[in-house]
Length: 447
Image: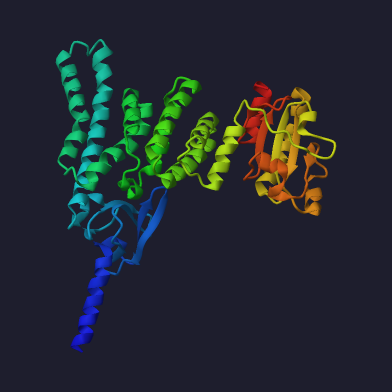
């Protein structure tokens, strides 16, 4: 019996050494499911899930190897950001939304995090109020005589600008929070700075270009995507014109590649997500620059999918000559000698079907006004389905029934349908349209 007890005790201690624990009491969440979520760069991780008992008690065990930030979520869609850097953290309160009533035990960093957050929010609110008053006392005649008040305003604004850095000095330099908080502050402030505090933007840009994105803390911080995409959104909305925007984006892209060049896996991941971001926002010159830079990095090992995407942007960037394709035995793309909307679609693609109906509305007008020809390359493999879908369409439609293996799709690096290319009569690429509405704008105003 004694031997069995020792074995059970040993197993319990071993299990305890393999996990970390977040325990708590949240009385108003009794009976609800509660989940602890973590981060892995761009991905979220479900660390642990349980049900809060009738008294509001719960216990969540997660891997001992996880160190970083987490999000505690309850069944009623309440959530709380927590610092997961200790073996055992305890939270006591009533409800996650009643933040002022929450207490952390055995977790200095969580208490520091809450205190910093409250100080930061309060100082932002007060700063905004003082900032509103400053131009009143500077320019309005009735208040311009109040020199003492204006001096007080300026002094208070200067003090408030230092609140975050002073609060950070109270946190040990070797702690996770000392690394995390300045970056979280940068992420949170960028959107507001774009619209309200434009004088801060040059500093925000330089902050981004001094960050070590290889730092291991990034993996579990939950900041990675927001920091990178927030920075490019800032650049997009700061520049006086698109040319200057792309110059600044390219500088930041070069910095990211240089910073991550020794980490192929992470560089692949960042590049792939950045491509998607550029495409989503139609920032094609920025995507083309990223492609050129990545493909020229001899020491960087690209995965096949990413390499193909990069090559597509390099070969098919706006201004390049589009690849000629054999449409049938007698017709090539180059023999049409008209502006062309080249479409890659398929009868089995629901989005293609929706866009085909829109295309019917545009086609006659485009052809009459601008002599634009639509060339539709289908990736169908079933002849019956192809004919059923396209036999009555007014534009030129071609299909060799090889699906994704058709030579035309390979030349244009097609990996999704529908995909569009707007070409001039000499097959120069004018635009990578995201939608038929975008094509319509070009046809009417730029073609």
